[in-house]
Amino acid sequence: MVEPRIFLFLGQDEDQKQDRIESLQKKFFPPELKELNFTLLYADEKQLTLADINEALFCLPTAGAKKRLLVIKMAHKLGRHESAGLKDALKNPLETVVVLDIPQAKGTEAMVEGFKKLGAQVVRFKDEEEVSAFDLGRAIISRRTEAALKILSVLLRYRDKAEKILGAIFWQWERTYSDKRLSGDVYRKGLKLILEADKRLKTSSSGPARQMLVLESLVIKLSYLPR
Image (cartoon, rainbow, N blue to C red):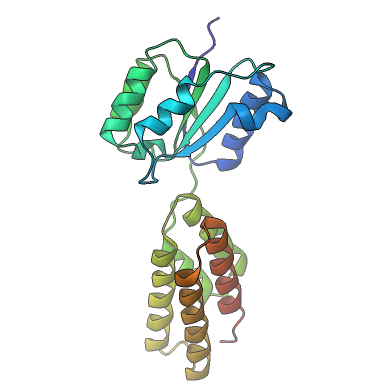
């Protein structure tokens, strides 16, 4: 049986997808060789180019590794040029196995069919319930801290901008105060926390991990304010 060299991961169960990726890593190279034989790229990063993809694709595995592994997250956001170039590259015999992570099935049917024609194996994962930044705001207002943190994690995982999330929290806070469901004192305390978080996001030079810490701290503090 011919081993697939392209996998399409469809769905949103991140834990299960990570398990499969780790299983492929163990199959192709020992843990101590992971850094030299595994590449993770994000298709929704504007600076990602076809040259970046090809560099990972055409690199040879190191001694002691059977194959290299390239994982492209949010692959449905690949530009037309990058997607076409990737397909052309995959027509060549390569020593790199490619995983295209496509969390959103809707609207990606043509893309999936295009890679299937190249021999890609489709692996389906359970979809998570769709949530928005406004669901996060409602969970905070309801003081459902655990639910709010889970929603925040999902939003950041799918690369929602921290500023957009903060804006939705602010909008929900303002609306709740307008509906007279917050006292003036609680409203002002919450507004101060939101403004502080906004300042930390704007002055922070760190990446997603730092942004997540800022937003997690805000969610917890707002949730625990008395109503």
